[in-house]
Image (cartoon, rainbow over all chains, first blue to last red; front, side, top):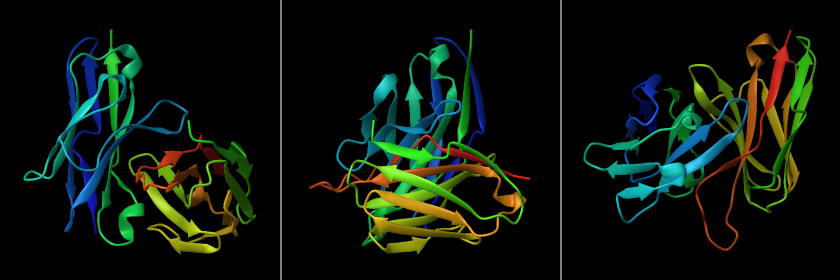
Length: 116
Length: 115
């Protein structure tokens, strides 16, 4: 069974600073990886995904993530954050095997707070 | 945005009463899911469906049942609500309209309070 660990439950940063939200996963098979964002009182919105190919994935709102198979990581980065990036971010994994690749396992989330 | 609606959006109910939450999609996607979101736990899968009348349990299915009689509707029922089921419930869909896309799209959520 797969699992996801988001290493920081809260990350406070100042506006225009760079940020990295860390995600590690565990799985016995190859995986698909996702980052979602949740703004207050809203549903989850897909930021970006890694299915195959280039390990550097670019998403919406200037975010990018890098898949590192040897370290089983999929860290999310943004070079300069805005106040509007304040939200909770979730990393998720889906296994590439048989019929189970339709289920996602989520991390517990990282609350990013951008301060002026 | 994917066409997913959830109803009701907010509900307060008493312990022991039955509750049904509805998820409706207009995307004709095959897969539908119910999650609950609780502080410190992220999202946890309750039940999912891989087709009409085809459903299976997730990791936190005790106390919940589901039904899917049409492609577009996926119902979550709490037969006898308990305070531990106070949560925010999200529906999600995942598509294969000619090509498998793997990611899931989420509805706006239902906030359920059991008193």
